Image (tube, rainbow, N blue to C red; front, top):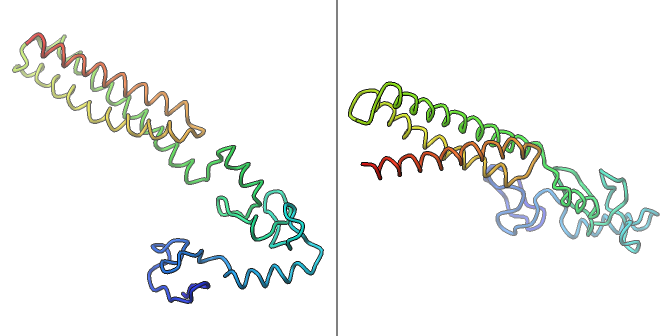
Length: 202
């Protein structure tokens, strides 16, 4: 493939290169400036004019509102060609694409799952220690309870990270992400307090 702007040949896979030429950093899938000027000049002779800049010819219609737009107003949002007004409206509404929605849902769900798993291990460790163990951590049940309590910490840490990332995205799974964050954060706080209490008593 050759860049339309600088003419350099691109030999790397396009998935790795991305949307811009690695030599001149111009958009690979947009017309060059000269070609764009020719298109604008050809369309300026017609009656289609940009809705924002009436003195400029149209470079196409917005896929969302249908208004004509010049090359200056033309932009992309989630693989759609939009005018500047629609792009700003979409940014203001913080609309998510399908990939962002899927990532947000996965992070929120895993935050809750890891939080629940950490609490199950923590409660199992507490039951094992108080019902079957004792104060001596060298006995079998007490040592197992200690291992379960320590093993629940990495689950809660991973859950806090995922739930925090999901909360920062502020998508349509914000309540689920908040539940995961509360579950994992309270677990870590309680676990830290228990270990401080054990260290103080010993």
